Image (cartoon, rainbow over all chains, first blue to last red; front, side, top):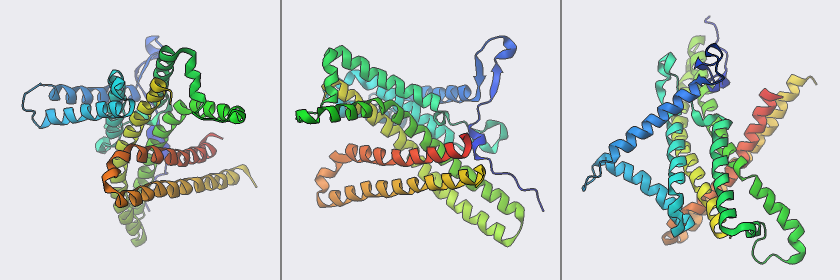
Length: 259
Length: 75
């Protein structure tokens, strides 16, 4: 009987050093995470460059790029209002970066052992930094525009006076937890999907290795399941990018208009 | 009970939360569909709110998943 491979779904999130670091005497290490961030950046650059020919009659590529920019600006202006135009660059940046890195992580490059894709957004440090930047924009814009009136954000309109000691801490906690929830949602959704696909991938391998009819049955079932889950994961990738951009624009709207 | 067994049971209990979040997400989309079919003209304008509700319901399930992972691998 063939040796059973151990199910180890966490291995794919491991960060490996590819170069630099201790040997060169610098603390900066070039990891696979950095490599895949560069690949994502290159893909976005390629996509946008190909789409920014500024032809009068847009071709397919330009139409796709315009759809992406139009979507981001529609999100910002629809949620923030006419002032939202200022924040389009950041909304567009987070949306495209998250979308492309989510999709890059789903790419089946793993058939070549060395080219196993690394999902950049599956690390809390990456999504955390994105969320902190979004939150910083909210704080800076809020205090810049409203000064100390920005704390009025913690007092919803028409709150009865006796309820204030209760409402203000609740609003404050829900405000402070925003960057955390923003980052956690994205990275956990990515991790959960990849673990699910990985575990069922191991089921296929172990089922075929077992060589029994039951093993083949489980492998076939897992294969069908994986095909469905992969389609669902592609949807989740797009939805998570959309939700991140949507919530960022809503939080900025809070800072601009003080609900 | 030794720690390893307790860990696995705890992670399994945390997974209940994921199922509850599934109910929540289904409720969000189901209610949206119910409203949208009654007034299809107003449905498109509420898509943003639909995804806000989805995000809020989904977050709690993902937190439950994170708790299960922490129990399994980090404790």
